[in-house]
Image (cartoon, rainbow, N blue to C red; front, side):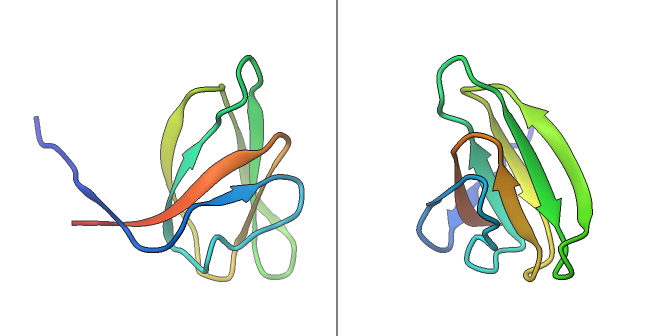
Length: 86
């Protein structure tokens, strides 16, 4: 098994229903902290078109990729941290 090391590149931000580009990150870590609440996470392009969405249960962490100009929004507050692989 190979361990992947993530390098933090900018401060973590809270994302909710207002679209956020997560400091123009291409790779970012998502954490859904709300106990008992799942979050519907949506990625949109610069023209506000939906690229995709997914449901993430509370307490889970995912690493996602997007274009720098794409935005992230969530149905409940989530934490997003720009990262890179080391």
